[in-house]
Image 1 (tube, rainbow, N blue to C red):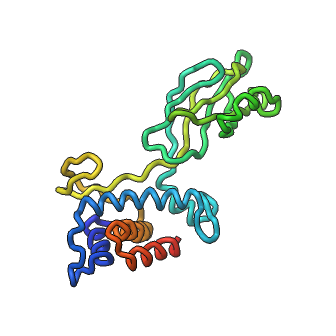
Image 2: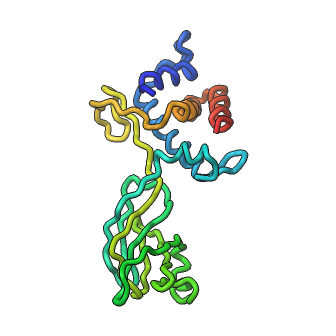
Image 3: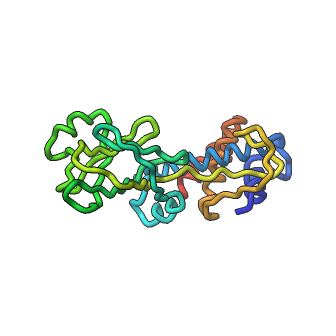
Length: 232
């Protein structure tokens, strides 16, 4: 959907184009609110906060709506004491899985099953024979800490390479000749929403709800907030 269409739809439902009510809403406010709405919509779909409690990949619709944001990227890893450390990408939003290829002194490369564990349970996991890293069983665990992922080996094997599958942040829209609210610089290019039009319609409702809350317009806030959630 074109940014010009998004702008018209927002102003139509928020400003009342015919009467020009609240016509002091600037383009940068629409951009900032739309980008905020994208993140809020995405996080709600991943969490499953709706009537039927659907989370990511729990229905065909969720799989279809969120597949645009689900990507796989190789990560550079460095060996530490009991684990390998990899940096999480800057556009990371939510974990999905990590894949690693490992080997030891006697065996060829093996694809490991990696479970995401809690950093607080690290010591117990390393001591538990049924949960600690095992090359023989091709299983290990990972933790997340300080924008890095720790892939534990317990010095039982080496990791050759690793890739992270995750949900990334939605691409922020930009409107040409509009001040970028994140950099303070006038945008020189048009960046449109990457979502398909039916999702953009929901995000527009979220956008209007945010703007309506900012200007204390109760009717628009309530209507668009309900419409966004009802259409999930």
